[in-house]
Structure formats: structure tokens, C-alpha cells
Amino acid sequence: MAQVHKAQTICHGASQATIKLVTKNTAIQTQLIDSRHVRDPMHLVLLLNDEYGNGNYEVEMRHNYFTIRAPGRLQWNQVYARCG
Image 1 (cartoon, rainbow, N blue to C red):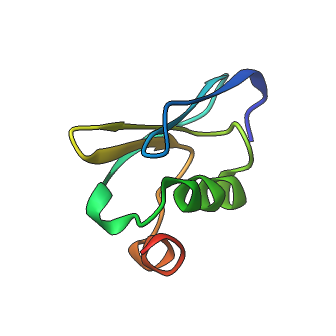
Image 2 (cartoon, rainbow, N blue to C red):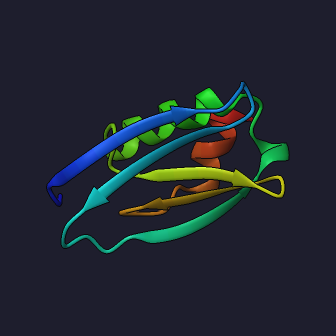
């Protein structure tokens, strides 16, 4: 895993959580998840923490979609089981 140089957590209300990070030498993949499939954004954050470690991903909500930038992609069954 790439070394994390700077990580910052920002939460804007109950419906949006943003985790920002700066990494070096990591192949980041982008994934969109419709917010209708996520009951509570904190469940999504906990899933991402379990999969990639705290601060090793970035997630933001725009136009009712979560945009996730992480070293890998989540499987639909993971999202449904933990967030749906």
C-alpha cells in the first residue's frame, strides 16, 4: 500500500462525509454508487475503512451519487450487505 502523506476528515451533516487523502504511487480507481442503495453514509465509511484502511480512500456525494476513489473497487454484495 502506498504511504499516506496527509489525511483529513471532513463531515458535512448526516448525509455527506468526505475523506480526503494524498498518496504517492497508488493506482486509484473511481467508482460511483447511487445513494438510494446506502441507508446510512456512516455504514459506507465503515465499509471503506475495513476494506482500505482509514484515510486510504476518498468519498464524496454529488447529485445523489457517492464517488469513491480508492485502491480497488467495492463489490455490490459488500455494499448491499453493509449499507443497504
